[in-house]
Length: 191
View 1 (cartoon, one colour):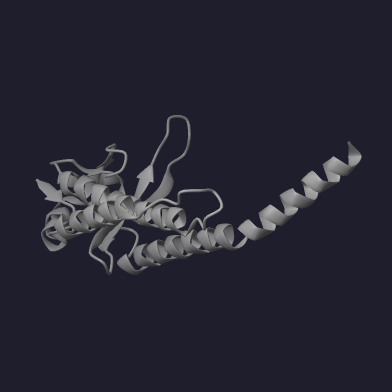
View 2: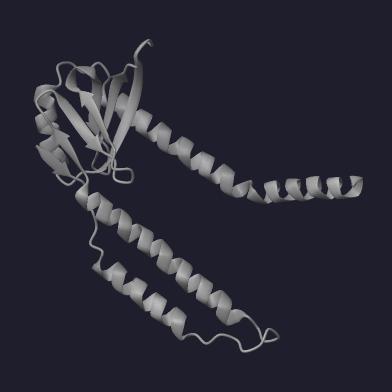
């Protein structure tokens, strides 16, 4: 049985993208280099904003055609950005639950040849009919050894780690620039 991911309508965003692009082309360019370049900067901002909204609309289209499939002996999860499938046998599922947003979180055992099994966490995008999916999975998973609260704790920990890494990368960018500038300045004095 197929369970599609939840997605947002894109019509309003496509209209906004069209307005941003048309506005960007209607802004006159400066005639000489001596004139202020405000219009060029405004064009870059408008086209950049349109590109960001375009990426969001593309993601919504990819979510519309991606899904989770429940078979007799396994669950198959499709990732919307890569279109790759992850197939998990029901006997390998250690625990599962619904997240606050309505996504499916699964803790399962993944075994590579020649290695001992490792517990992995998989979180899907928001699923349109998550309650029906959970009811169907409940009858097929033999035994869950990981409680739902532990699964939610792992999801929260993963989200916090990703947010912290993103903040470190964004906030440390000026430090990288200063460090590289000092490094290049040091090399320029040597040579």
